Image 1 (cartoon, one colour):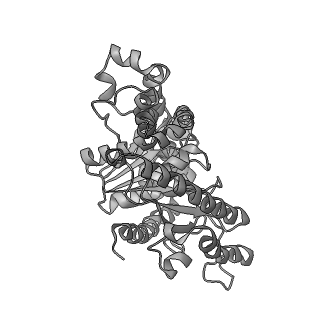
Image 2: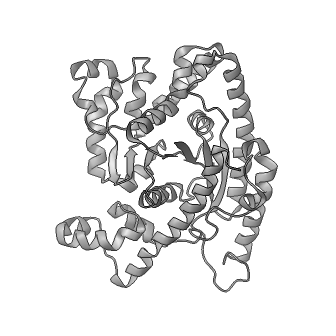
Image 3: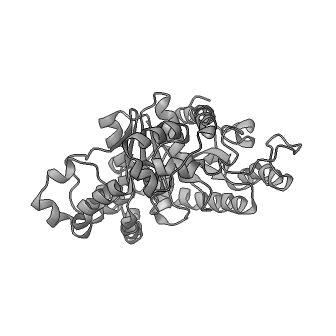
Length: 375
């Protein structure tokens, strides 16, 4: 099992949309996959679930988030029989209480795809990380547990449900929560846009990785062997970048069909990666992997309004036509309330997205396989 995160210091790059469609592509390729939404904005969760479903989960959890132990004592079993948010799962550690004895089931999205929903209150766990961080240098048990709990949950769910891949969505921040996530996953990749902001984002991430690696190596070397078990054996590896949501210009002379100014930024991205993401954090990337976006041009260009229709129907883009037709029969009111109207002339354009994301997923898998030492 590999734990992979999407990460960019810049927001608005389509990170959650890309992650959502990658997960569905892996699902349709037969790979058992779990989403964990650790972005406080919860966009990945909103892609996969109806707002009323999310509200129902959050409402049931409210009193546990306020005071976990007293709420749990009242009914220690029932709350664990239905899906829970990632903050609920982290709450016992946040409060310094005993771990849950049973894992709540994830939300079932498809045959091979599940979700642990996000929650707006995850900032509380981030506050505890900040409070306890220094204790990790002294080997404090609760501090180590707080830092490694996300990875431990990934491993627990993988053992119970047989996941091959866990995809973690993150916020566009270099704060302590993302420091913890990125430093304890196996790999990450950067969705980017062809602009100056993405170049600076890569520089910021690279500089942060160096600092984070030093901190984690210090902690790792100071603690006992038994406390190292929930840390990854190797510090996180960079899987590459992809250009996502860029405007297509078919009349240009460059191989990516981008405006010349945008193409010039794409050419600079590998240079920034080489300069700012150290070789020790991208050990297996050969020259072609470093230069070429993941999936090359498969998902590079803008999908116009397709992602918004997919999110409204909580399916990947290629399933929009079938879901829309189903809703017309079963739940016309939902379409009217959400102002969803799709021209059947576009059905073919929606469906072709399956092959595009499958191509992206195949390149993604090729890179992830390198994390197993298959150089």
